[in-house]
Length: 317
Image (cartoon, rainbow, N blue to C red; front, top):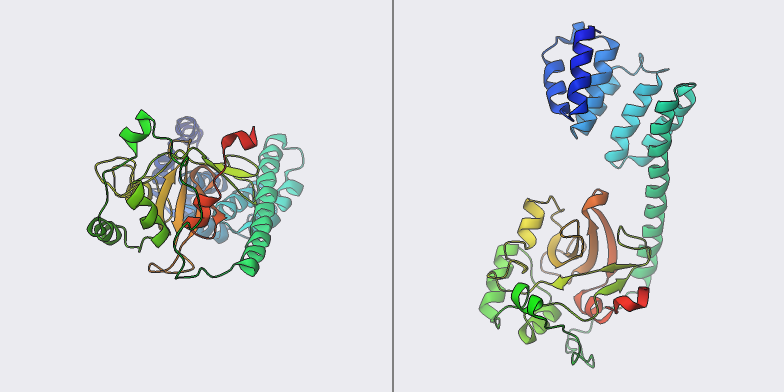
């Protein structure tokens, strides 16, 4: 590689300007790219989150990379972040063997292998929890009044902050219909029941247990508030910081409706998940972790179960 070009690539990499490196390399005819340039290309594609392209380019040089530790690491990196964990693990194990005396590369490989182990363990826990949950799930009686027997006398924390940021004006059936049309999903009957009595707010109990660890804790998630139906409130289903904002601006997966925010200020959220029931069905409640590649963790069978399952933060102190 031309020393001047390598120096430029290093300078751009130090500024995390990997997209610029990609652009520069793509101006070089393919037949003029040496092995080091190809390595820079794949590395920069990975860091620009062009993972599919990184895989495609890497595989074009499969024979040349057969005994190259860095080639295996870069392809393993792309597979890992594409959730092709088993393929990633094989490549990373091979990279570790080939790295020999390259201590820096082995350190990178070991770090990513640790994440592979964590991801596989999380997937196993999730699968186990899913199997147990589905086996025990009891269909809801459609004739049952929502929250029958549940005491809401001390449920809400109507602080000045809650009233200002979350609690909306009394909501009508027309407003529910408008919200459903805007969101593209039917709201649960239990959610409508609760919002007619208290249109959003902060509950006294802000934690819900989970079977699997999350970015928040090993055994629970925490919420800041419950979104109501009043678009004048930023923290509401159709408000400025509501469901569409989280999906379109923050990149959350479009699996349903953002229903609660969390103490991380947007870096994790509670969603109504309509993947299994369709837009007209009864959604499950899940936690989505933006900081961990939008990992989805089951929380409760439905909104009513979620509300009834909330516990005080003192339980986890």
